Every structure is written in C-alpha cells, then in structure tokens.
Length: 612
Ligand code: G6P
Image 1 (cartoon, rainbow, N blue to C red):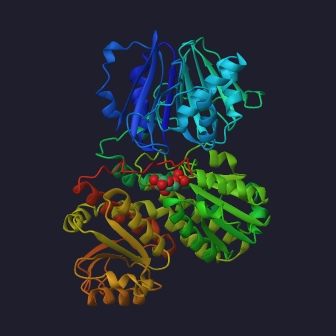
Image 2 (image 1 turned 135 degrees about the vertical axis):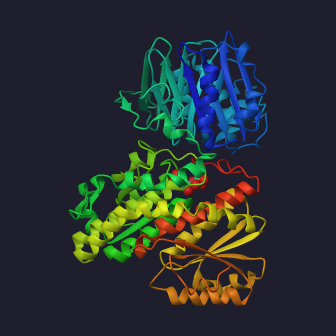
Image 3 (image 1 turned 90 degrees about the horizontal axis):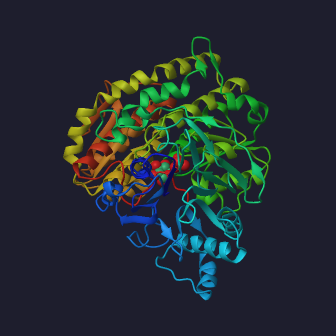
C-alpha cells in the first residue's frame, strides 16, 4: 500500500526516485509525486501513474541530490493531484511521504486548526507533517526529535520520510507497521518500502524495526533510535536477489513472467529441504519447534487473498497427511471475532509480502494468547517473517505482478513439506507413500513445464470467452481452493465477475445462473471423486452451460461432454493444485490482455496491503 523512496548522496536524485517509484508501483498507482531540494523545495505530483508524473517534469531543470518520492494507494481522500504525496507543512519547510494510516488524524487536525494551521488536502499525512512542524516550533527542537515526539502522539501505521528545506543534508525516516529499508552505498543512502529500488545501487541494507526512526546524513553517517529515544544498532544485511529478477526478462508482463517462473520457483522453494532418494525433509524453521508442532492440538492458518487460498490447500494437506485438525481463517475476521486460541495451537501465517496488515494483526493476537507462530513468507526480512517464532521462506523470488502466481505455488510447496514432515514423524502415512510423494514433488516442475506448453491452446479458448460477463469455476477436494483462486485471478485482472465453488455445491444456488452464456471451468483431475465430477459436468451440460474442463491426459469421459478440454499431466492428487492452477492463471492472463486490461497493475488493487 503506497510505495515510498528517498535518496541522499552525490548523484542526481530525480532519476533514482523515478526509477524507484516505477519499481514500487505495484504497491499503489493512484497518484505519484516527488519532492526535491535544490536551493528551493520543489514538488511535482499528479494523479495517475509514474509515467503521468514524468510528463510534468523537465529533468534537465533539476539538479537536486536529495529527494523523496511516493506512489499512492488512496486511503484518506480521493486519488487526485491535491491528495497526492509529498505533502508540505504550512511553513513550506517540511515535505513528507507516508505509507499507512494515521487513525487519530481528525482530532489532531482539529487541534492544529485551532492553532491556525491550514490544510490543502483531505489526507491524514498532511496532518502528520504539520503536527511535526508544530512540535518542532513549540519545543524548539531538532526535526528528528520533533518527529519522535509527534509519532508518540500518533495512533496508526506509518512509514514516513521527511525532507527539510532548512537542512538539505539530512533525511529523517520512521516506521511502525509499514516497511522501510535503508540502502547503504558509498557516501549515499537510499530509503524505500522494499529493496527493489535499492538493489541496482547497493546490496547492503538495514531494515528499520517498528517504532524506530532513522536520521540519515549526507556526510555518510546515519543513526537509528527507538521512539522511546534509545539508540539502536542494526546489523547490515546483504540483499540476496539480483536486478534481473525484478525486470521483465523478455516477457511482456511481470505476471506472465512469473507464471512461467513457477517451475524454477518451486525448485528453489524445495532446494535443500528434501531428498526423495534419501527419503528426508528438513525445514529449518520446523526443526527448532518440532515437539511443539508435532504435538499441536490444532493448526490455525491465517492469511488474505491468494495466500488464503493456499491456506485452504494447507488445511486439506495437513488434515489428510498429518491428521491434525486445521482451521483456516481470513486474517481480517480472525483478529476481530474473539477467536479461541490456545497455547497448544500452532498458528501458520501465510503471506507473499509479509506485510499484510490484517495478517500481522492476527499474528499479534495469537502471540498474545501464547500460540506458536509459524510464518510462510516470500519477502525476506518482512514484518511477518520477523514477527513469527519460526518459519520458512518460499524463495519464489520477487513477485511484482499484483495478481499473485508463483507465490501461490511456492506457498503450497512449503505447506506440503510441513504436512509431510509432521506426517512422517507422527507415522500417519506409510513410509512408502511418503517416498512416492517426495519423488513426485521432485518431478513436479517438469509437469508444470508441460502444462505451460498448453499456453497457445489456452489463448484460443480465451479468445472465445473474452467477452463473457460471468464465469463459474468448479472443483472438488484439492481442486476446490484452485477453483477459488482461478476465479480470483480472472476477477482481479480482467474485471469479469467470477465465482469459485465446490463442484457439488453448485446445485444449491449457482446452477440457477447457468445458461448458454455461462462459461463454467471444471477442474476435473481428481481420481477420488472423478465420477462425481462427471455428474456435475452433466448437470451443467444439461443446462447448456459452456464447459471448459481441465482433465488428465487421456481423459475420455469428460472430453465427450466438454466444449473445450485442457489436458494436464497426471500427478499425486495432493499435488494437483500445483498443476491445475497453471491453465487458470494463463486463461485469466490472456482474457485480461484481450480486454485491454493492465494485468500487472489492475485497477483499485495493490500488491501489499499494509492498511486494514
Ligand atoms: C493483496 C494482493 C493479493 C494478495 C493479498 C495478500 O490483496 O493483491 O494478490 O494475495 O494482498 O497478500 P500477502 O502478501 O499477504 O500474501
């Protein structure tokens, strides 16, 4: 939710900020803006994307070596020029960029208004910068101290960076609940919501913790303190990914690149964690708490969006293989509904970004109740990863397309390993079955490659249904969460209304929607419920629905009924989501492209939702 970037050093700030904003645009693209100091404070901001911002700037006229930039996902106030960040304080000395929400902004605004402050936007951010200015004036103190005092009065979440006209050799940054990373170059510093704007310049970074602020000086020094005014020293960490990974690498869109990266991403997520020939699984995070995990009374898996769908697959896997009861919870519901959480529960939080506010809050709640927290995150060093007692990274590499693809499949790989490792310790599956699944897992990437080769055929199907106004996705067992995820992919990027349903549940409502205009995507690879699915296909056929069926190679029964079949390689049923999701991702992608949609930046969405 909102991307922020800052630079101080010897280079020209403008190109660094613009490039950084483009890399962070996945976090929000309602408006973009920058502030630079080159003698004066100069602000450019505009509703729309970073490209729109570029149209109002003449880079030749700017020579600033300090600046900040923001790409917005609107919370307070419409996405227009006026509400775009950076926001200036009343004196014009301070410019701020902010990712998050100041919950008590209206009482602060009231107080500041009484003291004569004027507001030019509807944002909570403008209130914050003026509060900082007011503290600085009344306390007659330095900017960083004023930031510290002001933030102690604020309720909410923020990552902020402030530019001060009176001190063009310093940036002040702070965080609580929204991510912030400082890149350390040679006598220069970068600040950003994530490492993607930094990696091109330096691999050395420091992650700010919650309730900390940093003072970053042009002379090459920086310091970090808590909001309680205690000095902190953080170890400098090395970024592990390369620039290549955050570029499109010949693909037209990040989403397509990331769909195609799935075989490799899954291999990366499994590497060093299992061996089929030797018959072992070793998940570092799991080992540390293995007794508590094996003896858990219950698992609760909490997440949002696509990660919630992989959680559902996790429920099926853990109950099926490890025979431990599992509940899956939308993080946003879980945190507010006074759930029963016991010390003997293990709470698994799944999140690509590791920054989703609701998931983080759900973790805090479960931690308060003494449950063990196991995080499955993709972004290394992210807030959820750090808030968890233990966990496993998915190692999918940076996912930039807003619609999640490779993160989903690697989350499933990790949770499969977790379920299998517990199962083998508890003896809930025979060793022979354990080995068979491991071999199949080792082989799954090549089967995904085979499935990706169906792309041209899927594109043809997309061309036929691109103008549909509704879609239904149906699956049973392990394919039910895949149906949900397939429907979500289509909704997110093509704006076609789509619903995922358990295939058998269709007759309790959605069947009323079926007519000759309704495309129905069936996931029909389950051996265990094949006949039942065939009956469901018949039911749709009888009502003239248009059937697109994902089946195993060589299927004959459904071929005879369906309008289109997509034949995928056979695998263990418990691993089938890793394969059946691929045609659905491609179908959504092609339909969205044919409808002229921006697949990497769908309207109204953001990749990392750091607000409630
Ligand atoms: C947003 C994204 C989704 C994602 C969800 C959860 O809504 O657009 O793609 O699944 O957040 O994000 P997380 O980073 O926690 O997996």
